[in-house]
Image (cartoon, rainbow, N blue to C red; front, top):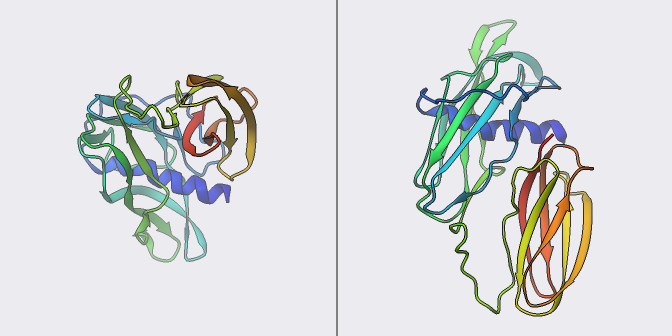
Length: 249
């Protein structure tokens, strides 16, 4: 399960290599591939904001092996064929057009989102592999159209909500190393609950607060969590909100 999720996440990050090779960025030297099956840092992109300039640098280390028809073969390099459903206004560039195992690469994602919402991406990837019988060949195309969603939220500082509506805002900072703040608005006196889950769906944290009408926040301390992506759910007596954050080293 862990390896499968890691590979899906790696496909997600690889789509950025499919455009210009002009990225002005440097790989993060602290990003390591401990298990030799591919890595990227950070593992979850921060959410973009509508009509606000957005920029993020991502470090990628390609995997070295590929499961081809039940055989574990060596990857020579990986290329991106196409990506569908990017948010309007977002562009991307990489510092290489092919990603070779054993090297670190960087991707610059930038632009100004022009449309709010969640954008599920369809990513088509083709690895070039070394086969013991036929030599260097292209492997079959792989598509991931379920695991990657880029979110574009309302502009910061001007979240619009009805005074009778329960609202939860994206945690800040995200990613975070120790502590992050999850703010919410409740229209009435209520009990509000925070739950945090790891990528396997296991509950790793739970707390509740009795609050008055107005804006409040949970101050979440993630010191005891392993680095990686997590989901959090904030619930009141009538509705709930879910989102994602990432714990860094």
